[in-house]
Image 1 (cartoon, rainbow, N blue to C red):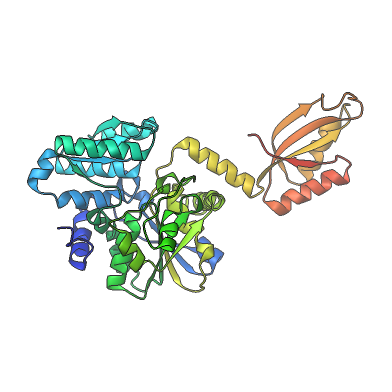
Image 2 (cartoon, rainbow, N blue to C red):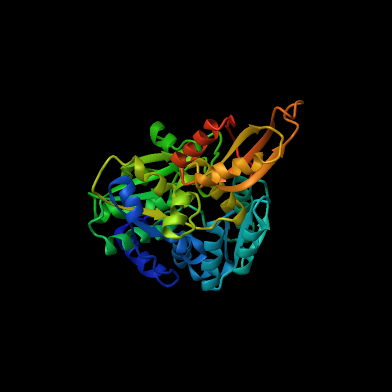
Length: 407
């Protein structure tokens, strides 16, 4: 059966099969990102998919290809994120047992979501590798079928249904950008693309802190990174799939790496311009747009998922605003006498600065008649506006000094 996967008949079958459980995620033309990069950009919003990510495609198709006997015994996987919910949902549709092994560090909300889909959750180990080892042990012990998150040609075939949908909507697409963690999604998308439209370029995108495929392609063999450190937790993978690596070598046209700071900016852009929450891993393809060495092309960025907890979301938004100088903190020194605070507030108001927070420190020097420190956290329109405010404060003898905001 493994020889059947990743072929045109298999992709056609998978594309029909996944329609039983997937939502239609039609391409969204983005005027904003098109203007930013000089190409005609379309978004494939898998963040709006059932369970909030594309993973349900591969899980459902893979389980559909099991024998009745295998489904009767049940399936198992290891995952702390989107794949867990994809397998749980697919297994629920087929009425088969699903066991999900998750690291003990998995946020409770993800555990509860997976349980709510009818899966049995086993918490084991601190990281994915520990959970995967336990899942393989349980699979052997209980006769369960292990559904790998990415290193499975059947799973990759199901993920390739995304490319089929892209070509039906936009047959003249020039570039498809696909995020890479372990490589399952990129395998499916790039392999089908080269079967149907070999002239279309497929570009993989990895986080700089977990560029395992970049290292593997450079070495010509599957390579394990020493560490994987990135805010794109869904793609924080140290080793790409060994079974699918040859397909990635053959079918990917290039791989781009993206720094975490660019993901923060992309999140802010996505929320403000498209009103969509996309997780950091799903934003890799958006952050990579400015690195494309082309103009006037039709480009599809696959948004792989939108499962982000609110604490992370809040942190990313704050850091994005700070990064773009839309929030900043300035320290000024002023005499400790009545009216000074009002004077400073007036200067800022006349420059249309919006004060968010004030901190008044009378103990910055022993001579309080000489100066006290006032730290002002402000909202501005951007870097130019920030610099205008600072210039006015300096002109009025307040010796402004920009410091890191503490919100």
